[in-house]
Length: 389
Image (cartoon, rainbow, N blue to C red; front, side):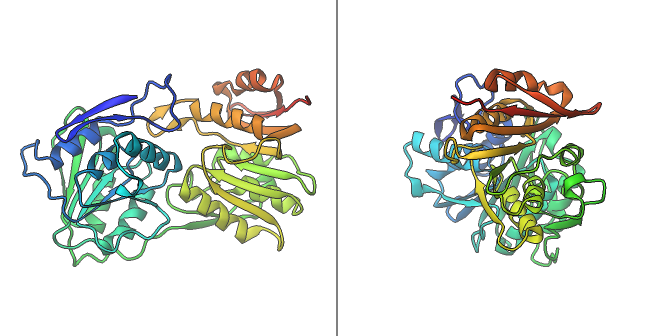
């Protein structure tokens, strides 16, 4: 837990899931810079918070938690299930009621009118583009639009999106390696509809995925092509048996689980991701390819926390090794532990990863075994089997 001090008070904040060993903060210098600006501490007048404030991309709820007690109406818009859970926990810790903030996902309809739009610049330029398109109709001439991010996260292309979709845009001076973006809504702007989602057909070199149509909403990794790790995995994808329960864990656009379903329509597939955009993409990919009557469930959640123990036969996993800008294996460790709990005795976890990440060591500690199914100079596919009691 760490404390964020602001002119409105001090707030104890955590990420989700809470881990006392996690050295990463639940807020950044970019969050603190934006809050100082709103409070009038950076040389400009304080920003009025009497209307509807929309907070987009708040990574762990720091901005939302601070503003919830001081703005008339706050709506948080996030693509992250984990960020939404962190926000709930941080609001409760601050003594604020559950209804102090309207919690929305990137798939929900945004507020019809926004008077202050605050944007924590995401890693994905595509997600920023899509969200600005979705929010543009809610802006008016008096809307205050402020973005924030670390200097390394704000590029000419970032400013170009604000300029094209919102209106005239400028940036602040840097403070503690953070910068603000100021954009003035221009009602004459006609940016048109969002170009998302994108669709493409997997080529003949995609193994079990060859010929599938992949549907990608904004923010999905490698949205315009098949990423090379997934391509390698598809060439070695195990075939599920009829009646098996398969989980595509960290599903992204869902091509792994969809390929498993197409190969064996009698299997039931659960697609799980902490990204709401990913879950929507996986459902669209499945619907575009699956046989009539094929069973599937789509879950935005914290790894396999919502999946009953001893209920799964096969888990397919291409785990991420970044959390925003930080490189970490925390997500992979949580996925592997969740998979072991969810699998039936004799059930299998299949993982693809970069060779240098050393996932085999973690899997052997958890499962007591880890077999190399396939490898090339960059990737390895591993198989771990849950033992019988």
